[in-house]
Amino acid sequence: MKKTDYDHLFFSRTRDFLDIYLSKQCSRSPYTVKTYRDALTVFRRYVTHQGISLKRFSFEDCTRDFMLSFMEYLLQEGYEKATCNQRLAAIKAYLWYVADENIDYQQTALAVSHVPFLKNPEKVKEVISEDCLKSLLSAPEHSKIGIRDTTIMVILYDSAIRLSELLNLKISDVNLQKSTPYLRIHGKGDKERIVSISDNTVAHIKRYMRYYHEESILTMDTS
Image (cartoon, rainbow, N blue to C red; front, side):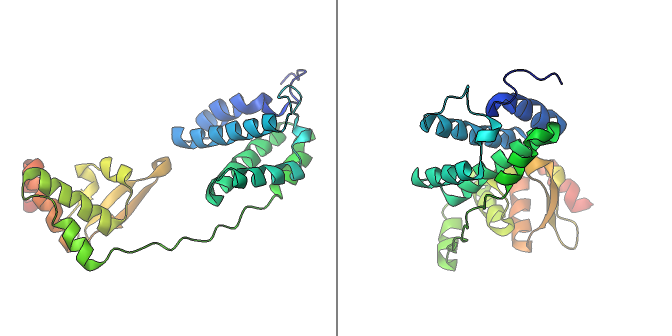
């Protein structure tokens, strides 16, 4: 690749990184690409916030101390620690991408790679009580829509899958005939996993399918 006068500028390779490397060569999901794009956008704002022109900010200017200051800035702006770590990880990945193509920037990438991630203690998740759960599941009316809503809540509670994963669930992903019934879930990055479900959930799904997918449930019952 022919070197140009602006190749040393920090943001000179962001388009290649986002639109070619991540999107096409690594086949990252649009959501993942957006996460990296957001991180670089926030970092760009920080650079200008420091009074540095984007036309002058180079890879060499992205030092370990500069990144430590950036992390302090994010905390002061009210970002969660997990989000701060996500921003830092994206910038580290970008620098290694650039360094892999130009050995001159290996030292910069290595220095930034030593910037520690923030310790993010796990949050204690509150568990809904059994009485509250019963009240929640009994809230929908005994109608077709109510049966749908109850089934949604039962599946989410029993399987702990994401709402987006439930919305993408197909009939072919539901297996109720095995000794251990399960759902085939397509998660982030099109990764597939199997999630077992309880007999109670199976009963709710079958009731739902009798209302919405009668032909499919008849096939299941006779298979």
